[in-house]
Image (cartoon, rainbow, N blue to C red):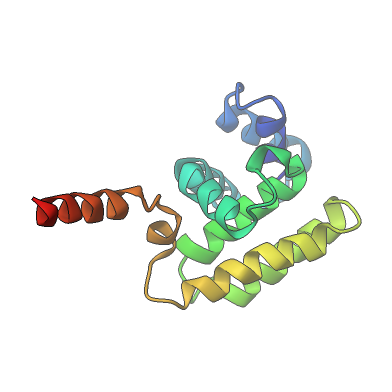
Length: 155
């Protein structure tokens, strides 16, 4: 989380791999699973456009750039684990609880509740038939197809 925070704080201009390597060297010398942190950062950044759209849909009153950097990156990590990680390795409720604990420890006074609300909303939506990525996709394509069909039937 710290490396994603630093990278995001620098407006995504630094090399995240270098930031992560430096942070692991400084703060995680005894950490056995260094590849997990690298895989998590790579996964979050690869899926960030989709993840951010899902967050914005779940919290429409909070545009992604108005969410605090700490909360935003906790949500990204939690959502990545919720959607893309192996459910046996990281059960959804564990991913949500870990994100809430991170928010309580590193975020503001209401961060835990905010993260819980956003991830809880997304988790409920995941039980519906649409995949999270489909749920985040703009609905314009469906509307455009419908409009074209209506115009065709009016001819």
